[in-house]
Image (tube, rainbow, N blue to C red; front, top):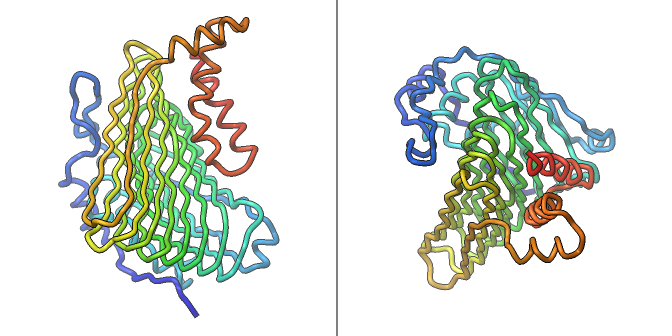
Length: 381
């Protein structure tokens, strides 16, 4: 019988804190557009608050043996040993800080063959000054599920450092959606990584339009032939918000697939950077990978940098990347206005339509409707 492939290294608090103090700060260096120097924020000095997960899970899932609980309650569970095996907390200041101050977190286990019709919804309820939410999802062979993650915090939370680790075992299919709508007083740093085993699927859907500063990375690693992943999402800095997103599809194994799609917009003095990468290792023949990033500027003061990249070490592969940055097309705007739509409504309609290819990647009609509503409010500001 196939099993989850995990090991169990654990973070030592002293080592993690020392690394948090010594490693460089993430994000772009301050310059003409990026105005925030993360190194001067003193994030590692903030006192830890709390982050407590709560779950919405269907009774039928519990009857199938699905586990959704605080990680502290699941330490005896074999799959909990996957903690710290997907995200290398030693490589980043904020992941090290999460490892040092992590007191629990959300643990979700899908037993072999379990198929869930309704999503599992996780609410991370956080209190400041600093919160360190963590989520571990272990999907056993042949299981299928959707997980939706939300942050809940007030003005007292200054720092959020989140880590998500996903293990999708052979033939599993998992969708993980993350929605970040925190107050602009918060500064959010996130690392969401997943390992995808033979013939398994992992689908990311990421929405980021809250917090004054958001810096994060999402990565899928296709470990075995037949593994597939999609990485989709959008972000929208407005006013003085700053957003920095990195997305990577890592292909160490042959005959694997990935698709990355991000949409972004900026208004006011919003600043953003997107770095997208497809990494194909030398032995990874037969990989089929695409990357697309489109950005929309809604203000003359807004700025978005787009940096798509390919690292190709094998010959027999299909790989594509593309990016576009621009304002609303004058011809589209003129066409809408000739149909009796005033300029403001036309601009809002075009901007919302721009995001639709990313929104449709999110699970459930209710979530998609909520995202469209939140985007509509952003565009109207």
